[in-house]
Length: 67
Image 1: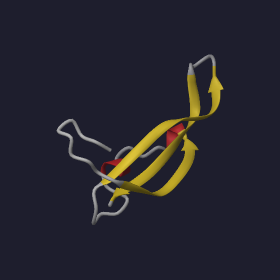
Image 2: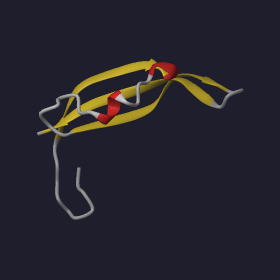
Image 3: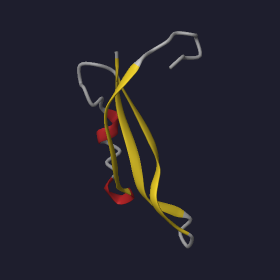
Image 4: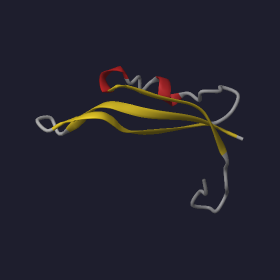
């Protein structure tokens, strides 16, 4: 990843998971997966799409730590 000031960072994926949208613990995502290194989380929609709610029922979360 390259920051706006051109400083570059590298991350390694440590885990991925797909979970129901109601089970996403956003508080947990405020702390790095490895508390000894800065972390990065990528979250995207997954699962089945519900036209009535205009939402997907799951989220895929990618956990990464800075190298």
